[in-house]
Length: 114
Image (cartoon, rainbow, N blue to C red; front, side, top):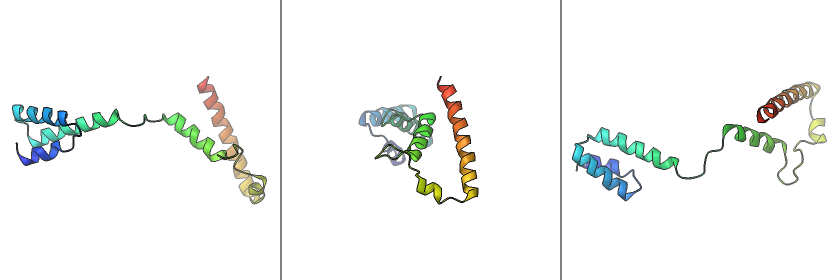
């Protein structure tokens, strides 16, 4: 087997898979490009079954919002009266508008959740 084929097989973690694909490449006279495609498919397939399952986008968004608004130690709101007192009148109006928008989105989310 040419060295270019062996280099492609190095990407595989499983010795059984290496032997299996090497035999198939020999029997079918696969080009290095064709073998590379097969190996890459195998690598993607083996990666998807390993590790932590991905968190759905909805849960990720909810978690980010909660973490941004809640103190991990106390469980209370991260923003205090001192933080609000530092805002200008314009910033307070912007904060109210964003809070209203946030409340709308939470309402929409609650409807979706049932």
